[in-house]
Amino acid sequence: MSNAAFTKLMIAQGLKRLLKTTSFVNVSVGDIARECKISRNTFYYHFKDKYDLISWIFYTEITSILSDDISLGHWRDSLLSLCKYMQENRDFYLNVLEFQGQNSFSECLMDFYQGLVAHLLFHADSQPALSQEQIRMVSRFYAHGITGVLLDWAHNGMTADPEPAVTMLEKLLSSDTVHQILSTQPKSHFAPSF
Image 1: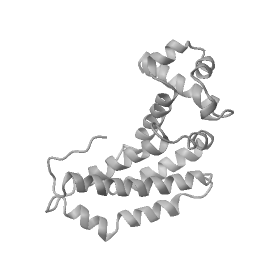
Image 2: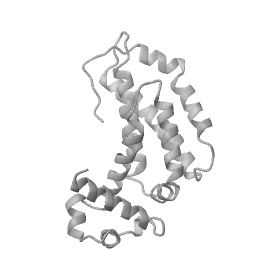
Image 3: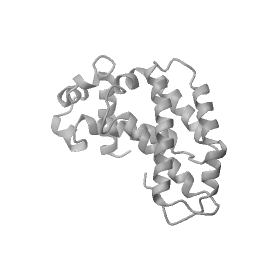
């Protein structure tokens, strides 16, 4: 691990420690720097602000959990792994779920799942092709659904078993409608960006 990666990880761990006792909105860059025993300049060398840091945490953690296998047959297991990870880090995620907008957890999930669905549509093997706009619309629709169900579960304390909700999502994503959409999409020149 490079020095920069180690420092970013150390700063992220410092923020997580602070969030055990303090709301995210009440944590300042100065608080994070003091917790990590670094200067504010060191913090700003690695992150623009605390929102950039929280975004880095989300994308780093979620990507490592969800990106191993983003095929149609394995996304369910990845989503269950994410739910388990969130339960293990419940205090952190309950604290940061209150933060909405740019760099929020919900935005991170939306970005990831929109990219996932677009990727699945892009790699389906049938005729005729969906336009880029159709892929974008279908991707956003399913990303909103997946993200909404996951966030509802999280906002309810993450104490319920996530399996029933994930099973319902699997049924919805495995429905004839989705397969019909997927079966009309050949491999094409459109490649979504993650």
